[in-house]
Amino acid sequence: MNDKWKTILSLFLLVPCMFLWNLAPVHAEDSQEDEDPIVGFTAGNYDNLADNQIDASISNLKNKRTMIVSVVTTNASPIQSIEEASGKRMGIIPEANKKGTDFGLEQLNGVVDVETVEYGSYADAVTALYNGEVDMLLVSETDRGVIHDEGSSTFNSDTRILFQASYETDRDTTVSPSDDTVDMTSEPFVIFISGNDNYGGLDTTAKSDSNTVVAVNPITKKIVLVSIPRDYYEPVSCASDAGSGCPAGQNDKLTHSGMYGIHTTAQTIEDFLGVNINYTIRVNFSSLANLVDVLDGINVNVPEGMEVDTFYSNDHVEGVQAGVNHLDGERALAFARERHAYEEGDLQRIKNQQMVLEALIKRLCEPATVFKYGEVVDAINDTFETDMSYEEMLSFVQFELAEHPDWQFESYALTGSSTMANCASVSQEASVVMPDEASIQQAKDKLLANLEG
Image (cartoon, rainbow, N blue to C red; front, top):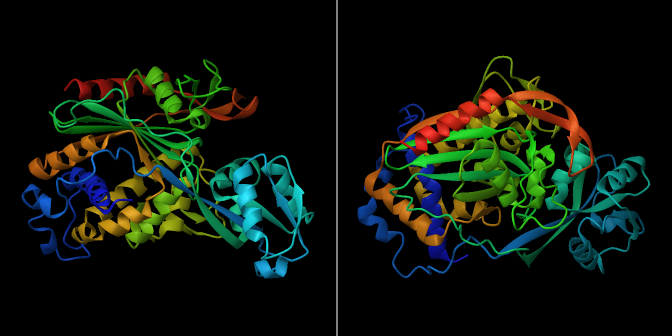
């Protein structure tokens, strides 16, 4: 990534800090650094961080994405290194990721001689590993979310990595700038932020695990955030780039719509919320964990009754207690993903994600973070994607630095009731959240009121 582009991205990442300054001021006792370094960081010295020679043709973070493949075995396995795996049986799932499988086998050639056993699904392969039919599995790191949902919810904690290799590939599709742009400094606009369930590199088709609609009004200086449960049960509205197989008009969980691209998820949300989405942003789980670690952890204040001893999705990870908890990247990720440990399930997970987001923004707002922009950008290098153009991002950053608006925030979460229903994309029943129409109407009213000022 071009260093000058990194500079602009880092400034854009600091925009939420400016939002939060007036929402939750950092008290003296909370600050971990002296505030003097931030003095003078305004539009007046903006050119010290970026100049007019930045390549304006760059419109998304990278045209390449990094893919990681791993050889994993169970914690109980006597195999301690990949060299000790010679002569052992290794399960592969070529139908899930042929390129990754071929690459992994090529990298292992000459390192270790193994017998491969093909499986048609991760569920079958994981069962074979647990039953001892194979000694290890070759998996793509981007498929850990699939394994969690379809193979084993404790796979991450049940296994350890023996070998890893990475390769770079072109994105399956190039992210085109939005065709519904506005002047972000003077016109209201809506962003859809999708957190998908991938690990490692950012895949172009992945379930949308976290969904937030952000309505920004630069005139009234107000921002409304609406969080939507991943399992919200709505008719899928297929975008033009959804590809074959998209179940247009059929009911499914919102998270499954992400398998047909972020624009299908965005269009589905547009239709049931009655709001026009101008821009999309995608991040994945690696983004969160990496960013939290770069910032040396975050603090979240867990309410009484919401304690978790160990996280269901990562049961080797220490849970959280009532009160303030300092979380590293792995624990922050587990906390943001947890739903099985709570009676409200996904609805509580949304609240947890909001706590993590606020804590993360607070850390980003600390003065010393400005001088860590290189590390911050490196942390999300292959795990962030947007259809905002370079010029739009730069313009909004300059607007923030020049005017430092007194932003006011309002957050709202859609609600519903959990039940079982048929999901079109998987042709079977699954746990879903039936929408509460009253909460949808309230969200519509809040978004519309903000956009209309």
